[in-house]
Length: 312
Length: 99
Ligand SMILES: [Fe+2]
Ligand SMILES: [Fe+2]
Image 1 (cartoon, rainbow over the protein chains, first blue to last red):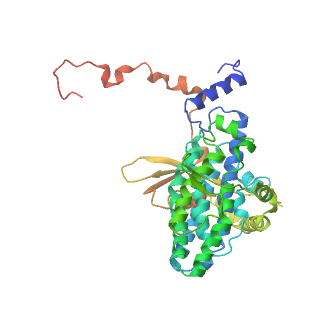
Image 2: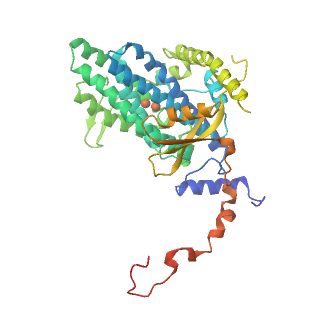
């Protein structure tokens, strides 16, 4: 390669590759900022999968039947798998897994703020699978077409598994809605508490999303936060109606002109409060995560010592 | 918070074969201390739904890969040998069953 090729030229060629739909692979040249932004996004995504196990894990021992318990256990195990797919994809960008874990545990890296809300009753497990995984599907289906190969491949793998998560959650609520008045109220209460935080999962409105333009130019993001949020609403409202749940938004109505639902307004103060550490469960989640990591330390060390001993 | 440097194990690349007769394809990677653990982790991470009938795990450091920057010169011996392709040859009209 000629030494005279400048950074600017490389960047221009890189952008041309992206524009013509060429997928970027780990060893290809990429702008340092592309690498940094991907590490930030992907590690945050992996951390969300891992921390996301905590609110649901809370109900494994209290699931109402053996079937439900087996299903929830399988679902939570999938989330662990999702975390591992994405950690391994992120490592292709040159960051080490131990470093990512440390960033999570010291609070330097973020995870999705939805997991800082408590799971108060069994219906919440239904609401998480249906709404939270439902929102994740919309996001991840878009990311499956992103410009970075390992991330896109991890998303394709994940999307195949998410439909199970989504359906098992919906089934829990559908079942409760066919039950007693108390059970119906329980389902509606979960709906009321999880609806708005689920909409927040798509991130700030485009006008307030500082990274959006750059990420879209690089095809790391292919749709705006607001577009994806609207897609989620349009798809979810009829599902709620079908089982008799009410969306907790009095401005929600079908707009025959736009062929989308009009809807109310997100409480962004709440969103920023939770993101900056003041949600109902931020502290609890982090101490559970760090605790699990510390309790597993001796296992990792023993495995390393064993491997060392049997090396020769 | 962390006093000692954390140990996450070596990096291993995982290859899965979907069914017998199919080739092994790269699936992703896992961290593990040794090959037995790498195999178990690969099964738990990449084949929870029977996605594989056979698994290979290879220490990532053992993989020798071509570099994208010499992709051109490295592969171009193939470029000027059109006669390797059957449509390089013209067959007289009417001749059948010669692929
Ligand atoms: Fe997931
Ligand atoms: Fe999920």
